[in-house]
Amino acid sequence: MPFSAVLSAFVKLLIIANPASGIPLLLAFTQGQTTRERTRAAAVACSVAFGVLAVIAVSGMWVFHLFGVSLQAFKIAGGSYLMLVSIPMLVDEGSTKAKSNEPSAILKKDFAVTPLGIPIICGPGMISTTLLVGSDYPGMVGTAGLLVAIALALGSFFLLLWLASIYSKHISDFVLTLAGRLTGIFVAAIGLLIALSGIGMFLEKGSAL
Image 1 (cartoon, rainbow, N blue to C red):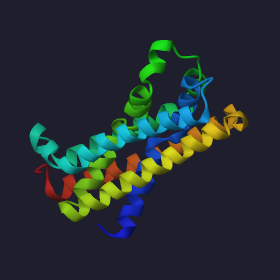
Image 2 (tube, one colour; image 1 turned 135 degrees about the horizontal axis):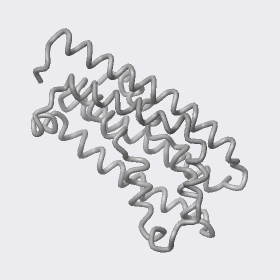
Image 3 (tube, rainbow, N blue to C red; image 1 turned 90 degrees about the vertical axis):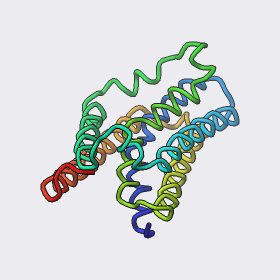
């Protein structure tokens, strides 16, 4: 996988991961905790997400063959899904406040694994993008490049969570809402491009894998 493709995959994964959705959740579930404890929780969440995505990146096309789904159909469905994901990011004005509600003590215990690690960070959008990017660059070299892109994306996500933990008192709801809206626009655009790519492949080659 060329460096430009790794960089492109990194940007796509980071945008779709949507740090604006993870930051308020982390701050809500770690109210009253120290920066060290918040950092540990962020590290656990990102590590869990990387483990899941790494398995998906390595398995690659086996997933398609297992379920008998063509790559073209998956691109169309995956791109359409990403466009649907972007809708609440653009119009749901209460999502950020809802995620900031005081969580229960039970959820606080394992929140780093779920829901922060899965599905907030490693959700269907990230899984779909990992599969789609991996299908464009098969082989060991492509998989290695994809793993690097995943590591960079989740590393950047962790860095943002860490910075949010340090400067949490200075982050306003307006900034989080604005970041969420801009991210939604990029997610919609990426989804449209993926869907159009799948349609183009279908028109050119048909529905075979």
